[in-house]
Image (tube, rainbow, N blue to C red):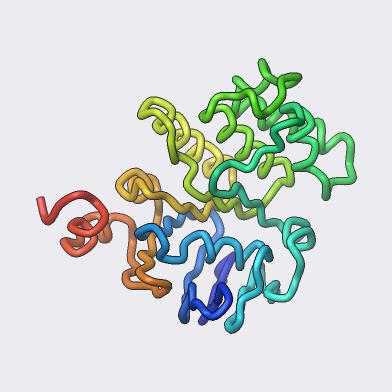
Length: 239
């Protein structure tokens, strides 16, 4: 059984249809990439899964339970973490305070301390910045903080929305290495990424969204080899 199953999702912004019949699945332990052009509905899909917007139609099932009518806080408690597009760190709060907010659902002080050390081991630069206001961090450091904050809820599924956006090539490589490491430590990942080649390079499977609909779905290797996907999203036709 899939850890996450999205079936027939429709979503609107006012009268504008953002998603039409979107269906996807993410199995335990996978990295699944969701790629597509700007405005295709990728961010809307994650917002619907995390309860930040209500789908007009369809089902969202996580670990065998329908979560489509739950609020964001309860969805976090169920085991879904979300690192949003644009990082969205709390700029006037310190790095430590942002991480503490990420653990708002946690009740065990010992588990909090364990996870605090775990995320700082994954992102050692944040240890050097714990007392620094988050708004003064570099773009790469803010991205690390957004991911670390999401991990503080100890999610079974981590959803990442454009983690490499606006970063230098060296930092992009760092972020993708960390995503692999997070996955290898046992966290399932649903990844939105404009850098489709990088995303499919670390993913198990992938979906391509076009104007709110799933246009392609396959293994990451097959999508990388697809002439249509290569031409539209990977910067060229067949090699």
